[in-house]
Image 1: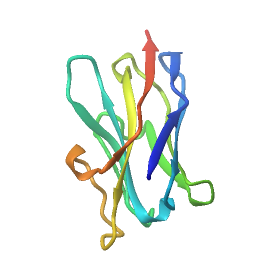
Image 2: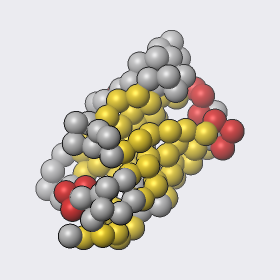
Image 3: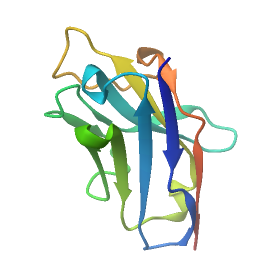
Image 4: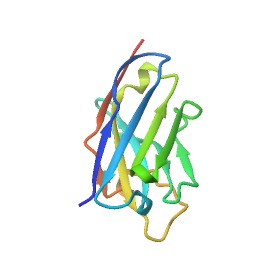
Length: 128
């Protein structure tokens, strides 16, 4: 049973940073392509960043490019989302997701329908 647990959310002022973590259990992280998504109230869940199974490819939504960075630690089975220069519009529930990428090691996935496993989400609130 694959489980994802996010941590690191909270309340910060605009311009500050947060680092979200997503701990993967039940299977090695090296089997999965990973993604971070966010959902604002009343809106759909959108991709923020994604990383390929081999870690060599990354994707960022235009709204977070140059401010957010996705990374992973295979030894800790953990994926991170470093968020710098946070803005009030970054306020959302952030969720990590895992896709079992058996044959596609270099592809990043950006649709919610691509992912089989989801964490419970962590709230990020950015005050002006």
